[in-house]
Image (cartoon, rainbow, N blue to C red; front, side, top):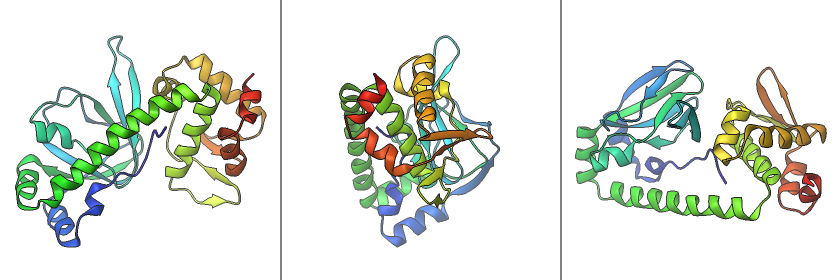
Length: 233
């Protein structure tokens, strides 16, 4: 169950192909909170995150937005819309100040046709995405909500750029209770209850809008044991 992860298919390519792609990209700087691309926009380019974090969200009928994933440095997104020639299904928002590199559809199509390694790498990414979706459903079926919350928090810590300080690590990816609940498909009250339990156990804390895991090892052990099931009851 990963809300964020490094799936960088461009890094798998040979150096000369990576260099060709990078030479055709242009750089954009986006401020925190700014809309990057909106659902319904045409798929005119693919993007790679160079610095910062981006949130992928679904626009709900009631006007709210549900968090689907967090893109971290190295992540590439927008390929499916470009390849299929369709509009974007989801919205992307800068969670922090962001620097990204964009490759236009024309430039991508040129490289895609020239280097067979690119479609091969993309096939691996799409296969990984499908298997991750299946795994997400398996985790939700097998783990109680308290474990799910802990797993997501550990994933956010793993993908954060902050250093480990002993057994603790701060999460520099902005995340709210509402976003966690939307990602897990439960109510805010449910997630708040589990967060409170983890806080009371001194496994996590929050200061100046940043979450912190106080003991990575203990939280990891809890997610893999029956101990958290007792903790949840």
